[in-house]
Length: 322
Image 1 (spheres, rainbow, N blue to C red):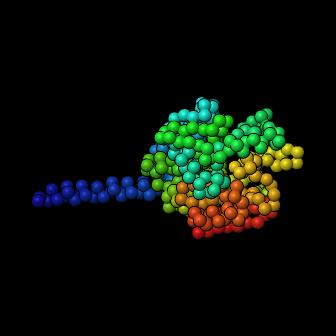
Image 2: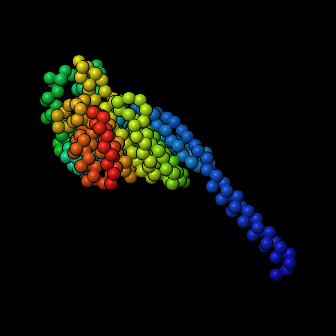
Image 3: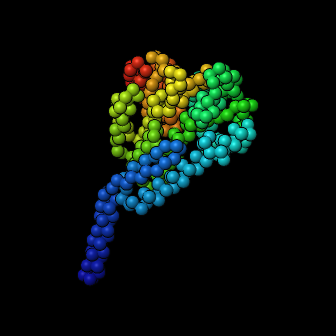
């Protein structure tokens, strides 16, 4: 090897090291990128840490497209959605997403002894949670018990069949399903760390630890702070979607066994927070535990080996750790 060849090879190696070093520095200097939008009738916030904001913007755009797709599948407020058409006809073909959501719903129903039930749609409508102008008097609610019951759903291959006058509502599970799906979209796009917040449902991934506040259901401020890492958290409560009529508080969470909203009795719950490894379970089981109440709800959380915070209407706070 001549001295010129040696020098050329030496400088080439130095240049390669510099390129690799600069590349490493660019990758290690992550910056926070945040994006806000509106979907599923609520706000959504993305917070990711990236080296390339353009790549982050493109990945979040794809995630928003997927959210809009799932909304077109699962929203009862969209008359052209898959679920709305099935509700109207009483039967129909299910897309892959819809089938996955419904099968997961039935699994949660079985695990919670029917406390979670997507067939509460007629009760939600009758109590005015779709349209206050369609509010039905309470004495007309009782017949709904004959059409509320997940065991009346029939699935054959990719088709679903509902009992006459039955409708399904996926509001207690679709957001959690969607957040799991779009978090995977972000990860596949190369985003290593991030958080997605869609109202009462949050999912995070990566090595960062996030402190999430649980709202005081009886007042302002935060009643408890929870640290999560690579987890999902969901809260169901009676303090956001409700109305008062004739001195009675009507909460949007329906007890499938009575077809009536959960009442405001002292031993009932006002807030349930579930922490687990995916958002679809956190979302659905937060509703199930809320329906079950303080004692049975704790038992379900322990059986599933989740974490939970239950707040009763009388102010009792129970934290379940597994």
